[in-house]
Image (cartoon, rainbow, N blue to C red):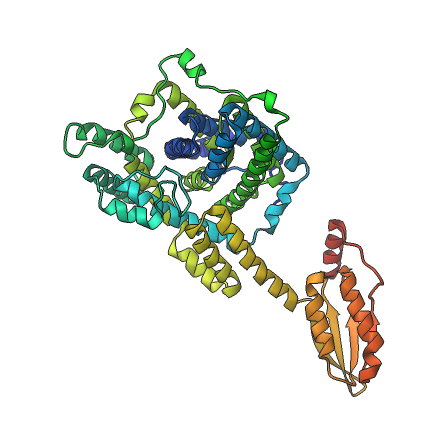
Length: 535
């Protein structure tokens, strides 16, 4: 659900720099930065793009998108859901510069989506599906990070798909990892998990974020393990590009080839990226709002504008397409982030780390970052969420579980699509059962059946109303009351009038109350007025 409550948030600068928010946003931003770094690199590697492109996309997603966005907790960057599209696009378009043009155009298309208010589709994601997506991401984080925790790093960081690019799947990768354990990585991940669990419980120490301590410990142990049997290989560490001079830094940028503007294939890729990135962003925004302790609501149309500007900037400088990303956003929430400054700071940390401390960052073991993500996964897929959905009834629990399983065994977008189909089925079933209120009344000693139609009677209610009218007892008095109806579909009106016309053959007397010959779809103003009047 969306509203405009945040539309002036960006201009209320003071609240972003007060001490209450700063002491939460700064530590959270460091944690998000530490998690985002390997994810940006891993997704760039899987996409067949330069590693710098992944970090650059994270920087732009943090600084540019977060500054414009109305979401307070969402973090944007390169997305695992786009890796297959990006990899194929770079190959089919023939050059990375041509692909960058497609990214710029995709951003422009997203801006158009924002102005057309396409973000409204986020209102139609069933809550059970969003909850299922969060739980599924939690389970995926646990399953995907287990190999990294034991030092088996064949799959790229950030992968969310069941079937992996290395021809393994999630389960076979875990089985393979069990036969290729690196004891140095295991020691680091176990100690990191213990710190993540118990450090926050020590009140005097809680001012230092546990993930920061975990990374510091990881770096120290990596150095101590050198030249021993516990030494970690470079594949088990973060691998950020090392920049030795400003000229070397500027040489990493790439620029779009605008001479391909008339290339139809470029536009096809641009529309594909724009649509997929927009859907994934809207799903992520809805999910982040679900886990926001302050229950703020993000303006989705503004988010599309922000993402569009971010993708245009990324494409112009040599980056990858981006979305709002649920993993980094979840880490932000779980680390105590309060405002968008957390995401903005994380973008600056990415930039500064690339310029000044790449050698130090390349000593961070993936095993300690796996521990951070394992805890995040546990919090997202906590058993209490499954219990809550069970108590909500099967119309909520079944779409929830289907979404979880579908995402875990396919990927995010396919899984959500399957969950949506099941969720919509239950919504339709509920709607079909509730187009009217059925009541028996007495009138002069004679029983009268009153059918009071709901506020909105759509085409989806046609079958239920037709079935009810056909199966009414013969020789009865029937009142069809449309007093409360703001809208009745033409097909339903036709059924009602046909029923009255043919009722004499069954000896049925039909009275129609307050039902017009035609209806227009009511405006929001009319619905509000009607609601107030009824209350």
